[in-house]
Amino acid sequence: MKQLITFLVLTMFINMAKAQVTIEGNPNNYTHVSAALMDAVSGDVILIAAVTITDEITIDKNITLRGAGPTNTILQAAGTAVSDGLGKRVISLSPGAFTITIENLTVRHGNAGANGGGIFSDKITGLVTLKNLIIENNYSGNNGGGLAFDGSNASIIECTIRNNTSAGNGGGIIIAPNTSAAINCNINIQQSLIDTNTGFNGGGIWINGANANSFDVNLDIENSTISNNTAGSGTGAGGGGAILSTSPSNVTLTLVHSTIFNNTHAAPIKAGLRFVNTGTNFSAYNSIIVGTSDDLLVKKAISFANTTTTDVVNCILGGLDAAGDGSSGTPAEIIDDPTKNNLKGRTATESGLDFVSGLQSLGGNTQVYAILDKSGFGFSTADDHCTATVTGITLPPDDQRGATREGTPDAGAFEFGVSLSTKSITKNNAFRIYPNPTQGLLYIKSLHTLQKVVIFDITGKSVFSAQKIYNNTLDVSGLSTGLYNVQLEDSQNNVSTKKLVISR
Image (cartoon, rainbow, N blue to C red; front, top):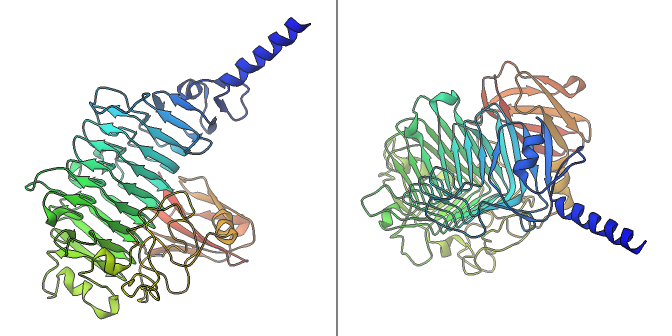
């Protein structure tokens, strides 16, 4: 009897040890994600326990990959980080009209010779959602140390992208269109941190619009922080410690409630946001874009050369290059417009950015740079700064942490004096839209009676609205293929904005 009990206990232990990876509704257990993916069918959810798994993963179907939290579930290409480009990528997403979600885990130690050391999304014409991930210590011998998007639609939500390196451009991320995908490359980054990445050009992000100029790149960054990234190229190169956009005519970059701070390059004029060629359409709202506190504005937070500046409102700006003299058609005409409420030539100290405390964990899934109270620190211009009306876009109601912004919002990704509340969590979870992507019909699940739906295109223009919604179903077949924002409101005044992809 003792032997039987011992055998049963050992069997139970072995089975528990194997239960690292499961498929919802499937009794089998797996030790590797790649093995579970072989058995999974379209629409499955793969659950990964609180383990560290060394694996090389390829996804070529509609799949949700869900961990137990980024500090608990770790997917890695190798046991240690190596930077020679001779190893493996962690996750590869194969081309197709797939809906792929990867959430609640860490991706690390990729060491690829090609683009995307951590994750490579190759022509995903459906939608890739990356949520609550830590993508760190990955290397690419080409471009995109942490992430690479090639002709894909993607949402990056509550992710930390840090300490990644590329031998080429885009230390943290590379974004490029692809002619064979036959779609624009639409990327939305929300409530995320891009920090301490290093690339030849574009330390944080490289937008390679020149790759296929018959299709566009639309990059929206909201409630996010881009900090401490380095472009390691020489003074004569493109630079862009924070972001480098290479565009003949086809890139739109929009910043909303974002903080860009302390990014570097050997040429101070190229330390922050940098644009090559003449085709980037740029706009910024309610954002802080500054250098370090002690650079006396020598390091330029942004160079407006080669941009078409659409709008700049409620922004606090550091050292500027090529903004012009304020004459018609120059960026300075917009920046200096008193109705736009911008402040230029400010250091990080003068903006009120609390860089002395560094990045802090103050709620939510990503660290933030806090701002200081203007009543206790005279230079804190970011506190209650955003008084000018912003038109043409929908401002997010919460900050990078998910805390609801107060009546007069602060500039940047952090809202001073507010904390996370169950109300903001309820608002975010009050609605669900499906299928996403859709080709015609859109179904909306709401905790309360649905009152109003407004759909905005990538430029912020309203293209669809409805107040009487029969069976919570909308026919959106009249909308063109692309990425949209869906604003939903219910009878309890809960308001939420969801990303929607129309795919034909």
